[in-house]
Length: 251
View: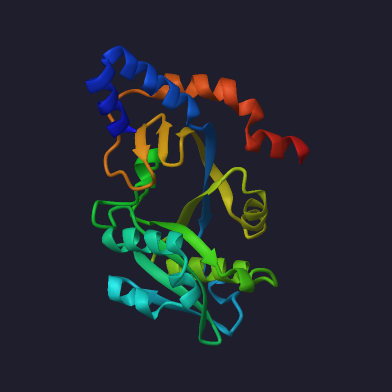
């Protein structure tokens, strides 16, 4: 898009380039997403609730060579691998969940000051402030062929147990408000909604929220401009037709 605008400026002038940019912006999808921040107190009781066949393999400092040891189906998924590489570069910790020795899922975690850049980027985007006793979980995943039969719940209990083993008092993570099946699972396991935060989504990667502008999930510093009025205006116009509103109106 930028190259097209430069060519237009050189060939037809600034006014034509502005009109070209306006047409391009109109083609970009704009929507609203709402993230819910969930929290649960970690206790000894949660440590023994996963089946004996389930084990957690902790990798505190995974590197890029470690990726080669993962299941072939995960390595063939470009989205998973892109996330893993970003997490490794940010120096987050990973826990593989194994059933009878076979990896069936994983989750990543960090603390308030963990990672290469001081915590998870969600902290800034969602305006979250963690204490030294809080663990932040993210990207909880179970392979499709292993979903159901209580396995996602067992994986989440392992995450809770690992957090307790490391001395954390609470675990936190976020989930999309429109992900109703996941929210139902977390609610059954005792997770509570502590906060919610809405953002305007432009295209696939640009999020504009109360705390700034963010590209994807790993922009390290938010933009300094106050985007709250834009968010409020967009929420008033788009929220009634959003997927979240439709889903909740049916429930």
